[in-house]
Length: 246
Image (tube, rainbow, N blue to C red; front, side, top):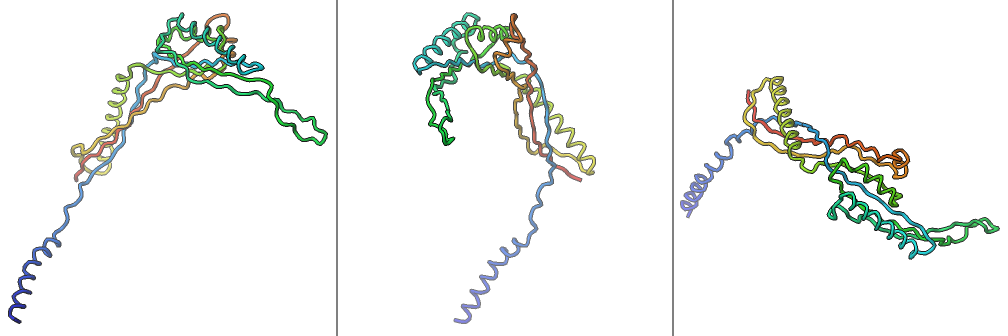
């Protein structure tokens, strides 16, 4: 029996020896890498504008205010179509009905009376996509003439931005390569192949015109509203990982 146990222990030691030896082998060192970020920008003149026009009407009753707003908005949409705006580029983007209150402080003890409804206010907002930038000033002017009395926010965009985005990407990659070369030279290492590359793109349009329609109409009358489109800026950011060696 003792002989049997001695043989069993010896066998277990033999089986355990390779495992122990394998555990003592040095781990493979992690690859040495250099991580850089490159950025690039490209600009393009906008060829698309998006404007919002609001018709605001007030009356004693909600029905009367709604009727007035509906009539004005029908004239506005008809006017946009006459100026060449297609149906697909006209979209109702906001509508609201709200009571108007009067607050009186006529109590002898100085407390405030409960608010009294004195009328109703209706807002109807139309978003217009303008594909002919040259007609934008005329569209703004016509909108005010037809009854728009609130809104007028404008943003610009590019219908086909691929060319500008690709140019921004190329500049970002070139910037990352240049940065990696400088860092490698300063650190006394040699750049190897690119191990990893990833990209993130964002569009930064110019600041939109955000001025009241009445102000624009007053400044531009009797001619059309002056409009400056500026440029749309497309930014690209690239992350590149290089292998490096001494």
